Length: 475
Image (tube, rainbow, N blue to C red; front, side, top):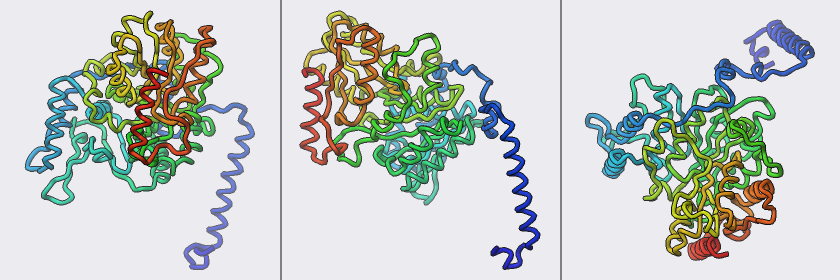
């Protein structure tokens, strides 16, 4: 009406436009009445056309990469910019330490991530990373954008200079509006299946202002609208004495949203792992090694379908001296493992192991340190669950059978009404029932229930932490 009043358009033009649009709607409505079946392909926009049906839905190639590719990417990523580009002395030290790791064929978290990104870029996959402090990394570990120290607004992005014919790499800091940014990245991920789109929260706690995007779109979008998304959420998580607003990515919320059946043990066959991934609504993981992180990122693209991936990423492990992986765990023919079994003395003495502890994420390193201090390496086995959803029923079954005389413990640093316990408990009970071990129970070791995710007192935090470790081995 405003345009008509301004004489920008005529009344006849508006009427013609309305009539044309009404005709489109009428025709679409009549055609809809003729449809008796719905085909997924009819709901998918280009460039998704051609994505489905080109590969078997139950096959996924190994996610490792050739060693020469890993070494090339790592070296390029760790080499100072060419020419007279002056970088900060602290960055020089970081780059030097990375080159030393590459010489030793080992990687930390930042190197594993760069190698995952770089290898995908080499394969023609656009990688996009956004979040509130992603260029540097919240914990100053990433440094994907280097800044000239004497020339303002002059930057260098190492991952954009790996190969002459590589795909584009986009890394961009975003505003403090999680709801808006996560919604945008979700939409971006749905436009092209051949792109790895990642949103990283500054701290995992901060996703809560975007909860509606997770509830209404990420967790249920495929079920409601037959639209897939391979969006990755990196949510820094861990109880490290930083208080209630900087400790928890609320794993319990995500695990409550997954469509995982915990009352009936599934049929296990050679395609079981891929069937699980195909049928689940969200993949939820808490990786404890750089290699696991490398593989799960690459698997997002290797899969013949797309699923959202939620990763509770570490903070203290970014520089933990033991949180390193060898090239051997990342080279060709290697792949992601949903669990990491104990590989120490307990694994060679399974009949005499009295306790099997299941855990996930960085707490593993604290538990192994405590186990060594108590001299329990022969008595206690510790199994890491790297992928929580879909739940690795077959692998957990095998672990329980491996240690027939061991009592079972789930160990987590989160409070009992939070974290993983309410999800893990019924799933492991399901495995026990399947093995006719219903008399065997899994016990809980961790913090007591709490309305808050973490204490604000350093003293209380240390006291809770000590009790958690003690309960894991002696409750």
